[in-house]
Length: 433
Ligand SMILES: Nc1nc2c(ncn2[C@@H]2O[C@H](COP(=O)(O)OP(=O)(O)OP(=O)(O)O)[C@@H](O)[C@H]2O)c(=O)[nH]1
Ligand SMILES: [Zn+2]
Image (spheres, rainbow, N blue to C red):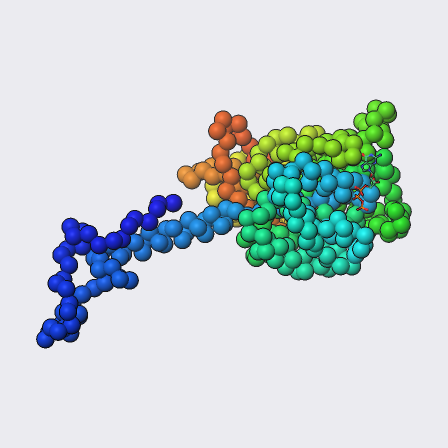
């Protein structure tokens, strides 16, 4: 940001000063009309113009700075009793040098109030709390939550480096993640950095296999349609998976293997960490940029497995395909004829059989989309696609320096996805031979 130059009068630049005006001159009016002056200094118009330009660029830089100082929000989700609060406390302790605001979104359980929202600033902490009352962000309290977060950021300018938002144990994180995207106001002051899902190693398999729709878990009804539980959604949306309560399974290697396989079938891209009492280093959890373009290539590269579906209820589909020929194929074909039908028309739910009858399969739904799209042609470009349910955003990507990416890659995590129908649609759209 260029410092403002001094605009005091100086002879060579501003020409000679008009003779002193005593007020007794007969042609006083005429003299005054010929003098141009700016705020007490008599300087040339060019200088005034130059200063205004500088003011403008300083203003833009300030806005840019303001813009840059957006605060990352990490959403911490996971089943009741999985260890979310334990994780929060660990992060707050380890992050004592960082200024962290913690927001709790419990089901109006007043005992949570003492765990109020704290902004840890070294030793002292500001006790303020955000009570979202009886209900949860994912179902009904969105706007209150958005407003409260905005107020909090306004109230403490420069005092917050990170926001950790703990959802209630049976909240679906997708609508909460979308809220950060869709709300212009929020979009200016905060951004969603990633979703951290805490699992209870001892109970999670039982919960995922609990097919009776009215399954009870800790006394809360959580069975959803089609034998899916909230745990499926919390897992599908995870950008980091904390396999907590490892002490409960550490002596049975089979359980550990079975657990890893099962979790990977649902979400094969999020890094997984086994922990005891949510003990893990915080640089694995903060600043992960899971929702913008910075890290998407390594996220896609580190995905394990081939993304074939085992748990048809909720699984990951991963497709790699040739770079797109040009901008037109990207917008007219890839976006309009592949991605949008996939996200918006619960494509695949309704299939017309040979005899013309309609066969209504389970409604399928993409929970999370991440894509790295290479566009060739005379204006080569890289696009990063980030999606939550039916909302997607496109960011300019960066050609990796070593040019290791030769193909496009897209990962979809969702309900009842069928890899071959999606593959067929893609091949048809890009008329693969
Ligand atoms: N054995 C064992 N217990 C744990 C571990 N982590 C947390 N706990 C205990 O599990 C219980 C629940 O932990 P919380 O951190 O309150 O879990 P939570 O997800 O915040 O629970 P809700 O807020 O009710 O959704 C507490 O008694 C913790 O001490 C662990 O790794 N091993
Ligand atoms: Zn909810």
